[in-house]
Structure formats: structure tokens, C-alpha cells
Length: 499
Image (cartoon, rainbow, N blue to C red; front, side, top):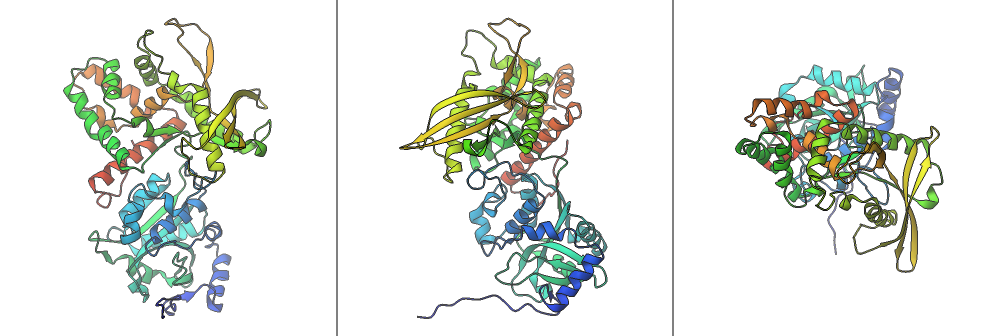
């Protein structure tokens, strides 16, 4: 029996020069000497081959995100947070990408959803000189990387549309080093910048628009470090639609007179399972991997999470949300569902399974023992650690969970004593952040001018501290991207809101 198949393709030279050839090595050394290979080293450290014939965009993006050391805020395998093609699904389903590939606009959407800072340029709205300027900029630094979207025909290669990162630049020859993620087909190669630019000017038949290039860099700080918005499931896309479309109509139609009513109308109308739309991220570790003290990296991450939590709880809006959730002493406390032992037991069970490299399911493991420890950092600052012994049949796994917490004054029995308690992230601050993340246009339908002014003062990002401001703006961009995806407009508008 005969089996049809292909083993690589012969790289058309010219116009390309294979990276591993004698000439390619010369170009590499000369580019190093001229300082235009600085972005190469981190990129090549994360160089990967696309896992599916149509995954060139996903492979290019995951390669660049990992090279920039952006924390995805979600687990890949085991306990590890790491970008992989399989995780880049918030702007297009993997099943659809596997069949059709991904468009330029949706790759921009993915990069923004993943937390990167992205500047995107279609060839029809840019120039060869602009492209060269950005290629040189990123080739002289490891703080940004360029992903090119081009048609292979311009390079005399087989195939059609393709994505690949640019690994360096040779000024004397005006050539770019293409780190082709389809390594099963073509090796990395140098290509004249003008020819690559011609390939980007091809029109993508799927969108009727030209291709282009992305300038991807790290944000000032990792967004979503404490709070993360899930943009994976269609039901959650509907929640995003509710928040961005329905809430403004509710506020316009209701006879609302004060902030308490604003909070009541929104929170009372939230769809079911909306609590799964935004979550806070806990750090886990095997008990044997840790010790009585935390590493420098663990302390730094926990300190930032706690500062964000503190800033949320100091906002004026937080007080209104807390008041709404605890409006009567006769009702069951809204914090019962946020009780630390309940949360810790759930996280410990999830932790044990992901540390074992298995997907989490509530029926799999049970947390037999949970205890809370208060550790002391070097500066005497208390650190909350929950330790659990998770049982699965005859096996046990010790899991530690690092819980961000902040001092907060609590109401006890409807009185207001001056004592403070260490509070972990709970529904009150999660809801507060979700409301802060709504677009500024959400509130414009409020008819009472005095109330509208008060609301704007409570939700304006300009009034927020820098860490919380970045967290909120990142979530707001994710909402914007989800809405664009729901409307099928991802390729029509590459921009994202910043305020």
C-alpha cells in the first residue's frame, strides 16, 4: 500500500537565504555586530513549530507572548501557567481555526485578550518605511517583537496566507529574519524586507482587507494579576453582551435616584453563573516544594495582589456594593459563600489535581483537612497560607494555597466597631471590579444629572490608583473584545478602548 505525504519543501533561494546556510550565518554575525539581533535570543528560546497546518497565527503569538514573559493568568498543564496554542481561543474557536486559520484582526484580538500591548498596522494604512522602522526597533531590543502576516506567493513559496515572527534585521542587505513557525515546511530564512512587505499587501479573501504586521510588547505591569475574566465559553460571551448592551438600557429605563439603586438594578439583573465570569487567581504549590517561608518571587506576586485588593476595597464604589450585599442583618450573610475554608477546600482539590496533571472535576478529590496559617514576612507583614491534605482513594497530597488579603473594617451585627480583619478576595470586591470595568458609556442614560456626576466620580479610571487602573482597563479591553467577537466585528475595528 502506498501512502501520500510531504517531507518539507525546498526553500526558494533567491529571494530567501536559509538561516543555517553559510551566507545565512554571515548575515547573522553581521547583524549581531550591528546590534540588530537583540530580539532574537528570547524569541529563539521559545521557538515552536505550529501543531496544526492552520495554526501559524496561534504558534507565532504564543511564541512571542512567552518570549515577552507575559503571565497568562491561567494554567497550561500541571501547575504551570504558560502560553500554548490550545489556550488562545477567546476570539475564535480552535475548531474553526484548525479548519480556516485565523484572520489578522482576530490575531490582534487574541494578543490583546492575552494581556499584551499591541499596535497593529494593515499594509493599506502603513508604508514600507514604517514597517522597516518597527522591525529595526524590535530587532534592537527584546522588549517588543513583530509578527508579520503575509502571502507566501510574494516570497515564491507554496501556500497562501501565513504568520511568522521577525527574529532580526540586516541593515546592509535590508533583510528580515523570518522565524517560520511551519518548520515542517520551511526553515528560518532571511528575506528582503521589500518582498516581505509586498506579501503583506496581498488582500485576505476572508476579510477583503490587506494583511499587515503586529508590534507586540509587554504592558507596564501584568494585567489580570489578581482578577481575570474568562473569555472562553459562549455563555460568558452572552454575559459580556448583557453588561455592555443591556445594562445601559436598564439604567435608562429605571427611575433611579441614588447609587444604591444603580448597584441594585445591575447586580439583581445579572444572568445566572455570572459569578464565573470574573474570578480571582490563587497561587498553589505542593507542600514539599515549599517550606515555612516564601520565595522572593512568591512574596512579590502576593504583595502586588494584596495591593490591588486593598485599592479595590478603598474605592467609594466598594462601599455601595458591600452595603447592597449586606443590606439586612436578618438575611444570610453574603460572605458565607466566600468563607475561606470553603474556598480553600475547593482550591486545594483543584490544586491537587492540576499538580497531578489532570483536569479538575469536583467529584475527583476531597479535601480532608484544611488549616490556616499566618506566616510572618521579613517586614513582619502577615501572610495567609491555607494548607490542605487532599485525599484521592489511598493517596494523599499536601497542597499550600497563598491567599492575598488586606485589612478591612467590618460591620458586626449592624454596628461599626473600629477593629480590622484580614479579608481575602470575596464577592464584594469582585463585583466592584466588574462594575468598574464597564465602559464609560454605560452610565450616560441615567437621567438624574446629580446622580450621573456622582457615578462618574465613583467609576472614572482617572480617579483610580495605578495598579487598580491597569487591572480595570485590562478587563474593560477584554469586555470590548468579547463584544466585538459576539457581533462578528473583530476584523472591522482593530482598536481597543483605553478609558
